[in-house]
Length: 80
Image 1: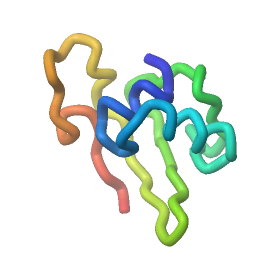
Image 2 (image 1 turned 90 degrees about the vertical axis):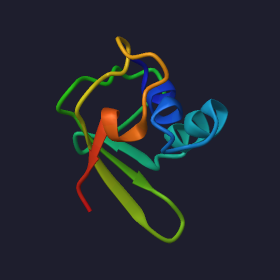
Image 3 (image 1 turned 135 degrees about the horizontal axis):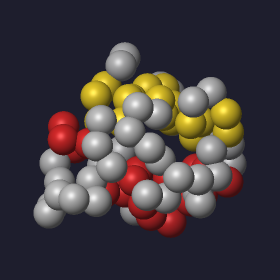
């Protein structure tokens, strides 16, 4: 699944356009590398999102493709 779409359906970022902008501005890393909106998210990846006043680090536990209306706790595990 695309990184920007994963951020939206996991509710880490509210809208897909905001997720794309965050990726374009270098605020999202995937496995310690800068993430582009089109990067593929796999199970086991570590995502780090740098907001203005805090950083969120999560581990992907499900891609969400096989779930109908997934809940955030079904998609990722928060690391900090």
